[in-house]
Length: 134
Image (cartoon, helix red, strand yellow):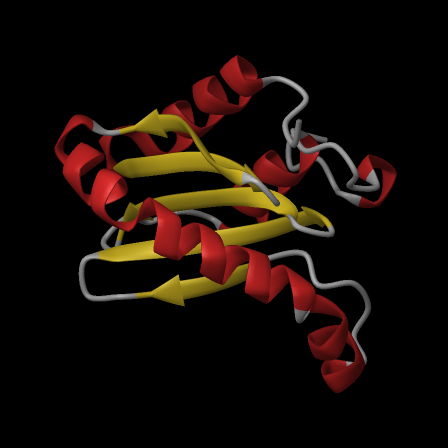
């Protein structure tokens, strides 16, 4: 299990992002588990989940390389912004993590958004993740 409290994470993300939230999913070595899928995204998730899962696992395997390359501490999150959506990948542990996608036009505070996701993940040192609410 990647998330400590799925419902709490969804409440916080929906409060911050609203209808711009597209997909929230966890993954492990065996598969991809959608936690939330916006109604109009269901077909896309069905069509692409296996390929996205494979890519997320590969990115997690490459985490150490990026950490060494940049020399800036632990990699917390990667982001990919496309024309239609912005995707965030949080690696929790080897072969496990959290995937969240939003509409590209969503105006969110990156630090608050990432902090919210990280605080709800297991295998993440929560004492090093600042709470934006103090």
